[in-house]
Length: 175
Image (cartoon, rainbow, N blue to C red; front, side, top):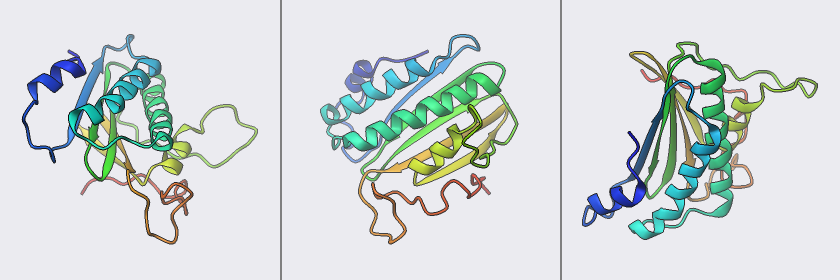
């Protein structure tokens, strides 16, 4: 069941202002659409300042839209059954988690400018600070973390994200 953001805001009124803002949604096997996930993300990020959180910069919101589109599309195309997403916004980062029923570990494919498709996970790694893959009882979840503040790291990319080797590093698995 999806709880509208405004209802969540009413329920959380008066909570710790430093607590992360969260939203989640789940879809049946044939009901998932990347457009719905992007719309939910947009609503979530638009609502953040009204919930006492810092506004997310437009460039980061665009990157987050790309991440959610790619991860949900991969879940739709490569995994049978239901899927879902969870969004978490803290003072430091936005975490985008997508879960599905496939047990296959996602693989970043080699760059091939002649191939149609198969570039999504490479893009997710390129715009995220880090990407983690965790196994679930039935399937897996992929979480992309996008830092809200620019990095002071010398290897950081144009928006403060680490792009040095981002697409060639494997997705991390929890210990």
